[in-house]
Length: 353
Image 1 (cartoon, rainbow, N blue to C red):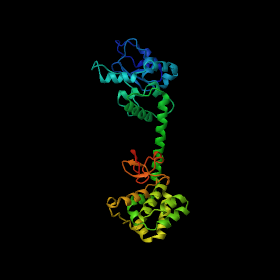
Image 2: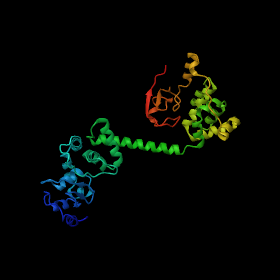
Image 3: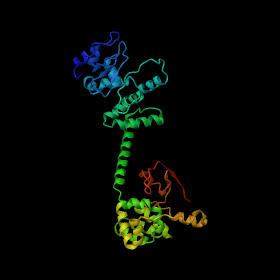
Image 4: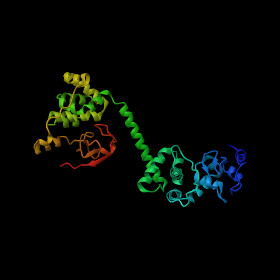
């Protein structure tokens, strides 16, 4: 079907009642599919039907399939842009037609679908001048489609300005890159770090050699002096242990390795229970709500340091895990909770007094 002559030969049984000449259709890149008045483009595979007298195949080609390479090569981008500008409300017209059909037997044109596009609305929303411009810039069709669908769902209308769509696409690409980096980080997570995360609460009950481990982390350059002092100045060993473990989890694999080596040196029994026998268990003890208000406030005050910057107060609760472990400045950079690695679906600002 590469040549006009080959395409023209497919029209031998073209219905004489159709008011568009086969030579016009073949010239515009279409060949006859042998059924009713259905035709397809040999290049972009876009199909059209329901031809009316006076229809210009080139105009219809540019209207529905503006990215066709054959169309661009023969007619030029200026012609295509002019045609597209003549149909600024193509998506709205199609949606209106599908929701309020005047003739139940009326047939819509065949639309060229991208992979996974099985609704005419999908194809039309992907063929607006703004969306086409973004696709021509090299953005993936899948990403553009997801972004456009999100826009229509949230605002009720498609993009009207190319720059708005491009900005959202760039943001979406950044999000994807961050997710890929996080997945890679999780895949590289050591067994030590994974086990610390899993046994965080139990370990905070049993760990007593906090200061020697803190010193080891400081000497290895995993934490700085301010972080070291903040944890060391906690009034209870369990609070020290919890802060230490949370800090190690946030710092990553190297911190977990230093912790393991230091624990083996300073508390061989706990080391064996944690890493060899793996029988360490969390045992619920006192109910904090039964403590005097003064004691509750004191403990809360000691747990208020952001686990990421180790400087500002925690103020953001992650949804759905419920962890309150970071400040408002560190929260925006996180996609997953640094404690449980659960995906952050939302956040709630808290104000501690």
